[in-house]
Length: 227
Image (cartoon, rainbow, N blue to C red; front, side, top):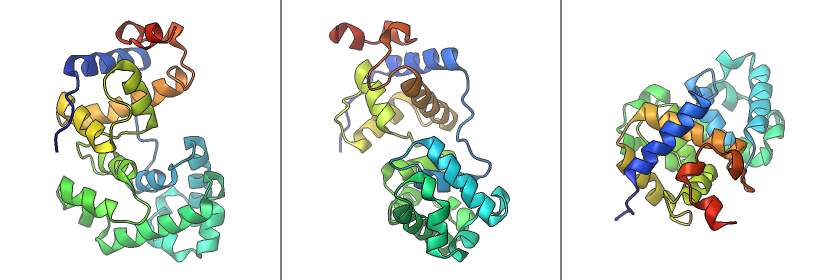
């Protein structure tokens, strides 16, 4: 499979500008690596503020975030788990998906067992879990397992498409490979870059963008093309 070439210099300039503007983001917002994985499952089709509320309710039910683990989650009746997850939306579906993930996680030997897999095998294993798609798997790979995988989400498509870094209609894998080839396989860079994209897309490059105050205005053709 071939992937479109991404402008390496532009990709780096965008990162440098965002970092200079916003500073380090200290992502992923979680206290444990397992909490990262739970958050990745729950954040599908919902705002992160809702996920935080759901995680707090679940952690409180289990006796604190240090008890947030696969076995205690599976020990909860599904209806009770769903009630904890009510703030995240689609809570019955997400309760089933989280239980499926926890069962597969334990079957694989927990984080230690999964961490022994190389990145490609680990990605395949995560994607085989019911309800885990590419973005969720890559969130886990990057933020819970420190693997050099670039996370592509709706914010990445929006910002990258407007900047001309990528074709916003391209497939997930094409965009992921484009960033990875342009930037090299760099875990800290991928971690920070994705977090900065999310921050900028929420603050400025919204669905209706605030181009006048945008730190990327000098790099971006979008304002001129949409006057």
